[in-house]
Image (cartoon, rainbow, N blue to C red):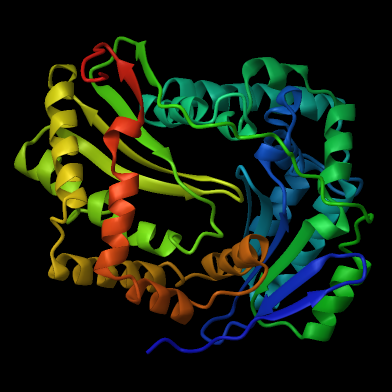
Length: 416
């Protein structure tokens, strides 16, 4: 039985949202500050600007140098981190409960007092260009960016979060200041806390130290356009052929997402999944093969990835198609559905074992749905998925003829 947990939500008059859940099992304290917008809310010329700003928050304030920020958090055994997604940006601190003031003070200073110095911008530009180079040199990362570009052409969801060398090289201090002003508006900010702190104290902190100007939520309104299956091969001298194939699905507001979660786990979500067992264990064609799902506020995707020898691309894709046809034609056993649900249940519960993961779940629920979906409710929704739900979704999602396919490596085989 999953223990019930309650999260407190407070919305300040300016729109800033505060989420708080106490930590009954440890003395860890995690504070995260999120924006309701991310990389997909950039213009084409701004591509990578949100991620650049995330980096610059660590590079010095009116009161602290970049080294001061690192030293202050690490000398109390804590950590600071941040990330940018297509839909959000987050900066967070993880410390002992007794050291929470350090986390609060640092995050408040970084988010309201960053200076964006020209010399630091120049240095960090080089760091991000190296980060882009890392992706370009890693075909198992690059292939997913290439696939997104084909699935969402001429749309922000098809652009890389890091931006391009051209856009990153063009950013100036005024661009970062303008974007920070747009992103850090009270209605666009969510403060998420998992840890033991008096709620009156937390409210006072947000009102006095995490203050942001008011303003409307600035989200992009680019049209997605009609999905058209694409075939693309990029020839590169590699030892393996990297292939991603898939299609658009639906947003994170669609109730079919629970059935898709189950179908994804069944097809390629673990060692017992269909693709892993067939393509790796039985045929020995790949070391790495899996499927994945991604949802945004107005669309989503389902995709399969594999890395195989160039001479066996056709064989591997033929095996994948055969498994998909089997699933579409009703080849799912009741025991397979039951075991997959248990697998997902375990992953959900194990995934909430850290303070950081619980803080993130609070914020993502709020930003995505506007309310908290408990792990108990989530598990119940997974348990309620029936064979008919999976069959209907498989008929729609596993139609390979409607897939876009992107291949990276020496062979162009298997794309037709």
